[in-house]
Image 1: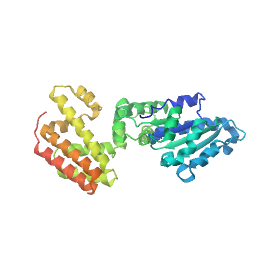
Image 2 (image 1 turned 90 degrees about the vertical axis):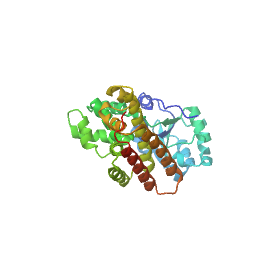
Image 3 (image 1 turned 60 degrees about the horizontal axis):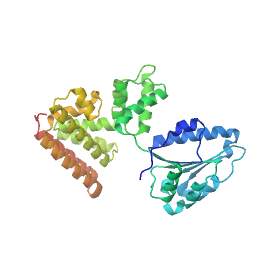
Image 4 (image 1 turned 120 degrees about the vertical axis):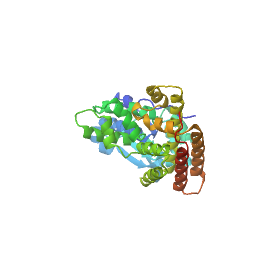
Length: 342
């Protein structure tokens, strides 16, 4: 059973409600945000004694036992001690036993923060932490939620952000929240006192992962084999993982298929955009290929995408070769179906 979604840690900490243990994993930006808030609240209680009451451990190197021993130590001239343990997910299950015992009876005068990229909830230690309410897993935001997250960040930072610009930025720089946050800050500097617009996003965040996929899909949809391969080569040069490119292509083709179905049913542009789940500003990125690629070619495309996914995960063939063959075949199929109507 997956851990429940984390509570609003930031709000609880702001109220002075600090737990003795936090095991935080998942979306790095949200984890770091929680760690920063907890650390600031605990250190604020320490005052001048902060230098004597905080310790940081690399648990893979130092071991869990050392961190737990420090967590059991009473604070010096302060209300609370802060202990941060990094890379708890890189500790073997058998070496987590000191944490199991500590989770049953933690020191109330210590705040122990354990940080991970991803925890294995089959391990007894994490099961105990979950049972006690100390395990918090931050799931990555869904793409549909990124624009809302950006708008909230903009409000928090007092940045004026046009609604369409939030959607454009989510598509251009997402889904990594750290990257989105940096892009928002950069755009705020660029726009100055005025609101950030879609044009600002296009000007500053042009060479991005998602735009690259849009351009690649448009070239494939137009049957432009040479351009498609050149765009793919550029993405690979920028160290975009092959499996991620395949995944994003599959997602884009699913959107194209949905747009084709809705357009065939007489849906308006607004309804198509809502049905596909994208901003109307970017509708042509899926609607134009939808009009150009026949249903038969789309069916073949999904089979090719499936085989490429399988090959990237199981074959010893160079991933770049697998992707190049995929993109060439998709573009050639689209070229053969030019003129197809929705």
